[in-house]
Length: 306
Ligand code: NCD
Image (cartoon, rainbow, N blue to C red; front, top):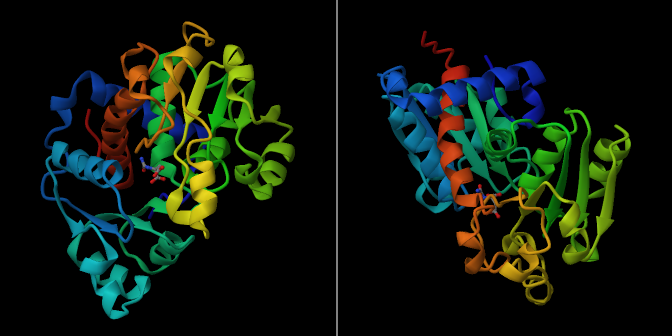
């Protein structure tokens, strides 16, 4: 049985198949509207979420299946002290597949080891967020036509931002991808990504603090929120939270075909005036998230539609 715990659980070929399936779903969603009839998805969310949980639920409903689950640790037996291992054994009796978000890094992996149904990591602490990466890859491929030959700016909280960690892991597998890592020095990419992923694979990257200087070079600008909930110290968060604010003036420095992505939620890092720029792709990205999760559920449940 397959789980999705890290973006690398899918080979490049499997990922291509999944993105191609997502493209077919985008082209003709009705064709897939009954392929998971009678199947159940459990969403086990121990941390807040809007898009990830609801897009998983929308995806399963679009496929004809049903959904059950909880949206916070407080409303589950975790508040009584139940372990993730015990919870997943029980959920395995109720559902055919589950998506889990947890503040502890590695929790979905522990769950997968005890589960008799596929487990999808829907975000574990500051570690990984593989389904956001699938969303990002489908968005980039749809907008740019390919995943290689791109200069990608990753901007904001590169230390705690799990979406950035997962995206880097995935994108280094494509030809001629260059990264511009834009962050304050306090929020630089962790060493285990810089050294073990970027340096170890001879990937071209630079680390800078100023967004304006690098804007003209970028094909994609991936903005991120400063991850308030992972800071140990409130004053440090307050000092960092408005470090970057993308506005219409800064957008003038960018190429006419540079797209802005953001996993959302946005706080202040993208001014609302940017929303009307045709290069602002973050709401389209949220829509792609539903299609790619439909493709993922079908793939993990081994459902085929001819
Ligand atoms: C992201 C997450 O949860 O890591 N959100 C999401 O799933 N779309 C990004 C964030 O919370 O900043």
